[in-house]
Image (cartoon, rainbow, N blue to C red; front, side):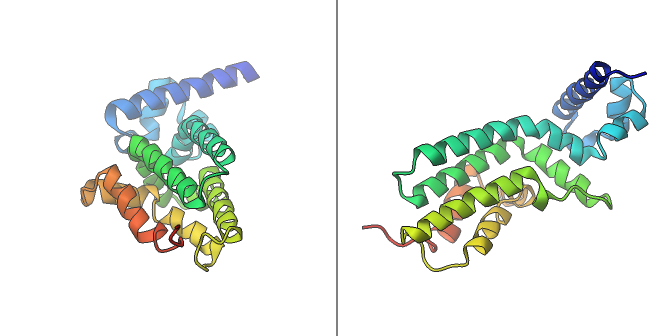
Length: 200
């Protein structure tokens, strides 16, 4: 009989092995079979815990995302005296930094999602929902302060995130050869500058 502590040990071993393999070979190159073999468990045991590689990567990303979420929430709360545009720019900048440091894993997660029928929906994931709510909250505050042009705020919050999904970020960085600094600058020029009123 598997006890709770044994189950936790197995889960931790899977995560440790997966992180080691992803770091050494790249997330795209590592299969669930390789992870199970390296962790010395059956594939059934692995799939009972993680439906697919995307779910496994999402679990590994949770800790990083939780740090990002806490940092963003703390900043939003402590920076209420600043213009909303400055606060939103900070959130976007932190998101780009997060993706830049984890783009390979995030890209592999999205690729794995597309390859399976019962996919983990990125647009219903905790990271997406957190970002959408945080950005929507800032946009609503900007509307009350009359800092923003008239726009559909909910639509704008979704579009701001969708313009920087891991796939898009990967494409801009690796195919188009934009640096993270370029991506941030052009994102501001294309999406944020037109939305906000000029401050005098």
